[in-house]
Length: 427
Image (cartoon, rainbow, N blue to C red; front, side, top):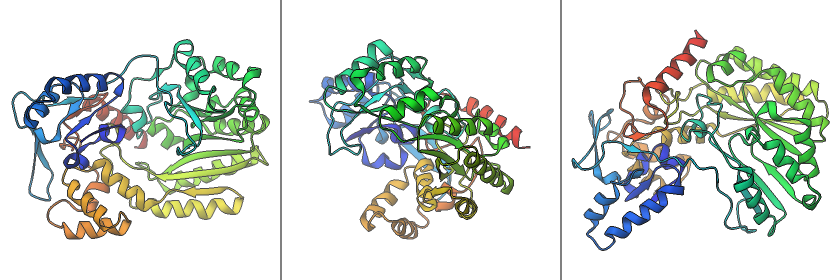
């Protein structure tokens, strides 16, 4: 069995026992090289096949790497290939072309019914220090308007009238205004347009008017926090004035709702930072009366290959979610927190090692509920570290991480420097 995608690329180790081969990184080049390599050994013995595939850059064969620990429930001591001809590190593969992905199937049975998806950008140039979507997928790449976007849009709109533009920072495409002009042509008047979350200072009257014209009533922006101090720490280049202006532009352009994404439990967060988030939301509501305002809020979860991978989940985060809810709802602001408990599980998988494979198998057997995780940890006590070690503990920067043998977009030394820059702001 083989797998791939961002979750497995970031940290494949919790799933190591379930896959023969894991493809790390972008599939545009990797899939072809993998298929070609497999064709060369398809009739060989399994051991020969795996060893041959492991020579392909970006192809990770977990069984060819041995992990040793400081005791059954201790830290990782080493991760090393079991043979001298197997690379010590597996390098994630990066596609650098300007023709990006688009849907190959459009169906009413998809998660997004009958929507034709077009990837406008890949990665994100902002590099917020917690963000997997930026750090893991660097560098920031944009689809060619003439070679990729327009041909893909024309193909999609020949079979559906619903179009989705995808990317972590769609509106930062250098020709995004030109793309809007193209979509505003009369032949596309019946097209319903959907956008991924957009950068705050790109919410212009032109963008909002285009969205309203194409049957979109709301827009989503990620603000993370109302605290200038925390935003500087996480490298979120944004001010409250820009957030307020985005709300004003959204209302002026005819949008009915604005959703903001926030986060609690960021490293260094204090009660004052939470108060500033509440004040910001109240200011936004006052500046754009009548605009339906929602704050969706998650808990900070450390992600592999980011500067914040060494931080744990804040034990106070659940209380902070409840505090925001208590303070915002009386002001008519719709507060939608993500489940803190499931954020804990997300962190477990994000920072887990291959000892979790057995735990995940038990969880599946017990029903895939939160209670299943508690039961599985109890059953495996002494055979792996406790949940707190994976989830809540801050780790030292010289610790061997479960993904230390996976080479990401940036070296560890650079991630450490970015982390130190963040810490300096909080002093």
